[in-house]
Image 1 (cartoon, rainbow, N blue to C red):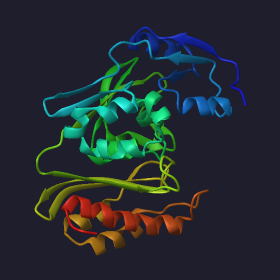
Image 2 (image 1 turned 120 degrees about the vertical axis):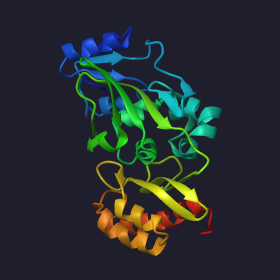
Image 3 (image 1 turned 90 degrees about the vertical axis):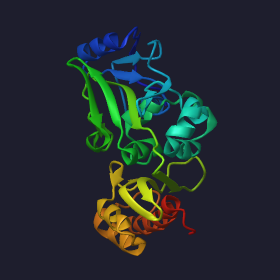
Image 4 (image 1 turned 60 degrees about the vertical axis):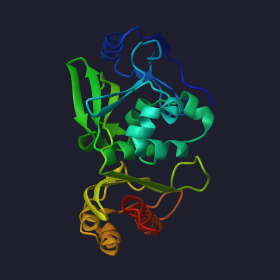
Length: 281
């Protein structure tokens, strides 16, 4: 299929893009376009105006400052994957990157685009939630930061308003006592996960604290399993797996039944818990 007709504008600045969003009720932003192009071609999205952000200087790049890793919204997945800053100071992101689609998509897709699109089966929104990061947002009312716990509102719905632009993601840099875990189950490498889990925790030997377990592919948004987090912090993996019965209620979908997804969530929890504690599975 071909997309419905639309106008095209190339924004010269963030403020320019915000202005155009405010003047057009059904405008869409173009960053990497790896999700947007598919929805346009299937006519799931039919904006009257497409606003291209790629001409805006300063919206890409990766930096480390004052214990925070900042990733510009237009930074390509491939650049994140190749970054030494990410490898050293945001290892959970480095663990997730090879699972994201395929090289052609990683060369064009953007880090901010993945967070803003908020596909519930995507890796990066769950990593953002597991790390307790912040979204840097600019809109008509100015700039603000939104914590990951308050960013995801529903299926493809986030804290971004109609005339808001996600400009950067801020992640706490890895501390010596931090541990990270990541695992997913997909039918083929690069496919969206049937179930996935991104996790972070503080470790004192085998004892964990500040546990954050963010599941993806299992609900309308990436989802923290808070009862399992508490059980895992108490050192009981069996109790943590059992607690998923209260944390998760996955619906059936085209990949698997909800019952199978819940079982797989427990399998992944055991694998990721071993990564966090350094134990053998």
